[in-house]
Picture 1 (tube, rainbow, N blue to C red):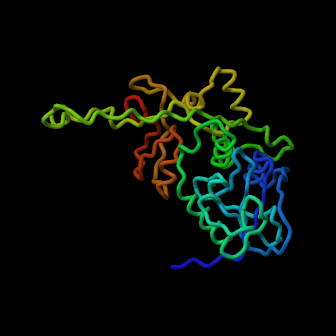
Picture 2 (picture 1 turned 60 degrees about the horizontal axis):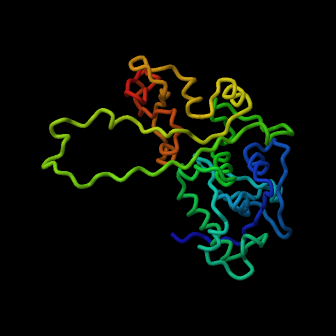
Picture 3 (picture 1 turned 180 degrees about the horizontal axis):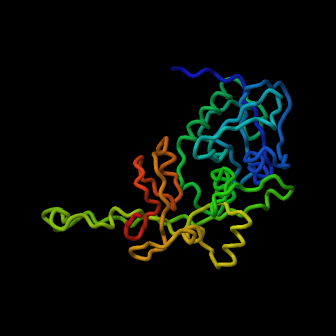
Length: 294
């Protein structure tokens, strides 16, 4: 089915990316960082949101102008895993915009150019994964903050973003990009698979956890981490769980019963959560070191 053409798409710009994301996460925030152009605007018009990260980015979630007709109060409704960000220079390089319709310069795109931008953002939104949140750039930090949906990664409580110092109410914890796995040995002298006699080792079924995890930490959790000497967010989060009753391991996940509504939610789950399926067996904890559940 052919998608309807887009008449126009407005560009709204956030020079301060932290203030911009805070304003998106909580409409009660006093942050009002937006810049936008003039011209005709109607309820329901799409809005592309550009953030001044390094490099500059555009949100993959397209906002919509409300009944008040204001571009700076357009409503963005991200998916279950939050909105993504795509480098606007790369987006322009891969999308054929007409002369004078460059989304890095123009405030409004019309006709075919508006349709191209909207479709490009939709494609980019489908091609996100958690590896995009590794690294220490402002682009990575902005992705982490958007993904948080306004909740602290240390305690899962909502961040207080309503004060004048809303942008200082949290700390963004960034982590190094992990090295790719070493290549497997493909040439072996075994005439038959080793698992036929010895079986598959139990450790093969254990989850592989990262060394650390990116997230957003509230003031209270920042103080707790500093007082206890934690520099690793994953260690701090696991410290709030009991140790394993069987092996004494400290990396114990909390059980989550049910099934995610789509694969994106499952693969984007924080490493301290264990999806158990739809049958609630009454257990609450899973040890990632030995697999014991209780």
